[in-house]
Amino acid sequence: MEIHLASMENITCWAFRSLMQGVTDSYTGMISMGYLLERNKAWKEVDFFPINGQRQWLQVLTSKEKECADFLKRVNEKLSTSQTLALGGKASSNEKLGEEPEKDNCHGIQLNCSCPSPMIIKIGQGSALIKRPLKVASLVKELLKQDKYKVSVKTRLGLNSFEVRERRIFKLLEELEKIKNPNFTEVVVHFKHGKENSDTLYDYSTLKEICDYNIPIVLNGGINSYRDYNNIIKTIPKRKNIKGLMIGREVLKNPDCFVEVSNMLNCTLFKNRSFEEINAEFKKLCEEHMPREIYLERIKNSCVWNK
Image 1 (cartoon, rainbow, N blue to C red):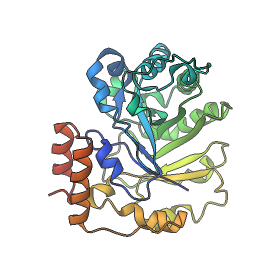
Image 2: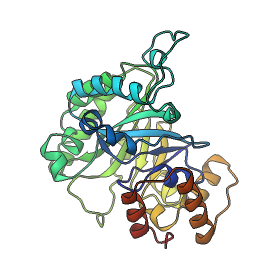
Image 3: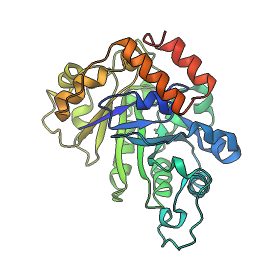
Image 4: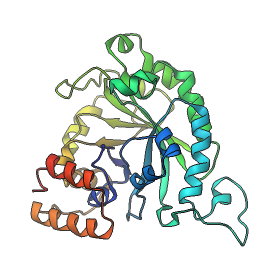
């Protein structure tokens, strides 16, 4: 079972991701694809140094196919240890390395169709894309025009309550289900719509129907423990398409929230650490690859264990 650490802006740096026991998949903070194309300094956010046992994903925002095409070229110029192989060709003996080959540990690219920020929605990105299933499918297909990186989508139930009633997510899933490329691996579903705040309860009433689609699904929202996950899926008869679960905010309270989940679902033997042990480990990781100051400040202000 896959266990994902959610993307969190100015928090999920390499040191933070590396700290997590039992996580199979982790993400950078959400990054604008246009920003990555226009500004070289943006690549400091892409800190894909090795993490044992974790697949690392780059979560991006875009609504333009051309940006996707240009981005694929840029990501290989920047990170790849074998640009030709990454683009599906045959490497030569004098293969040119990317600018930062030590970061060539990116497992996949996730298209964000979930962000509820009004600024992002205004430019037609994030959760504004849920009502445009053909556009989302087109963007995914563009990102699949390479054979190195896996591709996934993160979405919500809709931009607002109207879109939930209009069943927009099902139209999106219908289009994504048509994509047969094996490198399209999953859809992460955040079980709220884009206008709901953090205090609103998550709505899993559509999960049974979502599981009928032939698409691997990762559940996101209101899952902080194995009991939470089990309570959500216990009434779902068809679970074969539930590929995993994602946890976000709970990790700000307790980075070892993944331990019980991993031990129960994946038969691992991780042990809980004290906050003192977690803090000491985080400091060592920061010494290895120092995050930008904005990450350190946000983590200190947001995490009860980092005091």
